[in-house]
Length: 240
Image 1 (cartoon, one colour):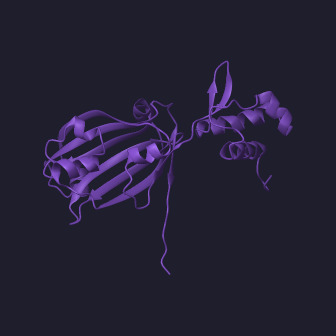
Image 2 (spheres, rainbow, N blue to C red):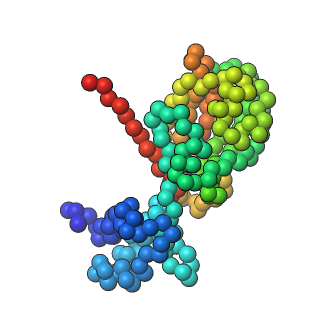
Image 3 (spheres, rainbow, N blue to C red):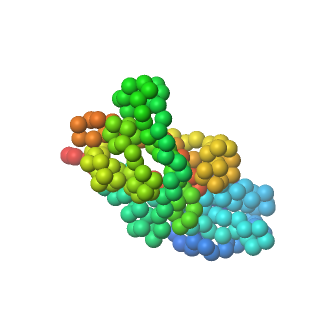
């Protein structure tokens, strides 16, 4: 145990190590609280705190009357330069991707959209509201904004697939660059209703701005990712 590390953190890290090294496999039932108490020679409260934290972070799933099980592996998305679509990245992980369009509407640009999309106030902008799922579980809630002048009349069918691919295929618009900002937020009641999670769950919040090869602003989006079902992989290349 590391210096100044509390008992429940030590137990949490040990259990997490067992999960990540496949000693406890996805879907497998882990030892009971009592068995873990005996194994680590600690109180039930200490074990419960460790299990609660692993459950909140999405590594364990508790089923009433049955016990505690290892959760399915989180969806991993690559943030470094990649042309791999969401569906392709999930397929590589053996997961079935799904995009559900909740609403498409036309709104007028407010100051926020005018700034991000470089359009005039009151200009028409398409608002595309979607959720993404992996194996039927909701992992992401997203609202994307696309200027009407860029791609007029985006349909539900087009938005049900990769939006960037549809922009290229149907509107001859190529996204050449995206900029993302990520932070951690706590899901409020409204976001939880879309993500199908308990209120207070930590989430990744991402704002994305997409541009074409001429620097024209193509899309601005705001996305919430369930912290218990998503992680991100970042790769960097360095020149000599």
